[in-house]
Length: 307
Image (cartoon, rainbow, N blue to C red):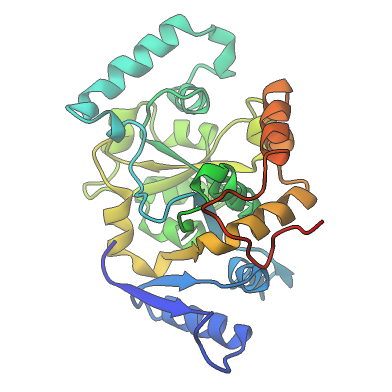
């Protein structure tokens, strides 16, 4: 990800959280190195997650970030299509065509490539899309949903989707301006490009667009979901963000903090039961919730339950 500037909230002696967040924002506006922030407590984490959310022109708090939570800090931003390896870029067309052929036609809610692409991603087909959310707590859920990963540091990745509009090709920027929006929808994308090859030809250097999927089901709605979409199936979002570090911040969640985060998310009702409505999500939540909180190789920390 290029050079990372490390801001440790845990080791800044005498520093106030507001000062540290303000300093990080100064770096962002100055287009300095990518922010790499490590938190040490629940309160510090919340301050960072909601940093830079005040919008003076609205008089409201509105975060400009899309969030993505992953359980292991070593993970990258490869798409599921990339993880197929081999000549994966040439497989994109056949995968989508075959998916469309066998899926129910009414499932896509509009016979456009963008609705089909969203539906395919939603159901696990390898695509060039990556899942993001407007909700920092939903991202925290995905960073802490599997207790088997609690011996690894997790990360919350944050991309300023509002500022990313500046790097879109003119045709897409015009559509967003007309709609007074920062994030594209399937209908907007259809106006800009009727196919993936046409989308890829909108600009020569690769670009990233953020795309709100149609409300396919309650899972999409409850997860407050959006997707990132690169203009080339082989283009790396990691590399693109390294070229635009002012848009990106990475928040490291120490392994020792994961149990506390998980317990507090459960109390806030950010659980599998809500984010994956239905019996499968209910069962996943109950299995995790009633599993032993501590393993032999995981000594009690400050958040361990007593009694």
